Length: 56
Image (tube, rainbow, N blue to C red; front, side):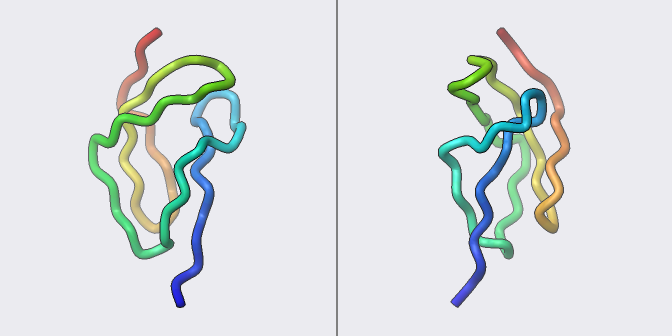
């Protein structure tokens, strides 16, 4: 069984509703934070998030 990780917002660091397995890689994935109400394009590799861009 794979371990899962809750993805946190790159700006406010609050957990988002996205839960992934640790082996998953995301490229240019649209992530929306309900707390700060911003959307981001993220890359995720080895459970490390890199924000590419954000919009209001």
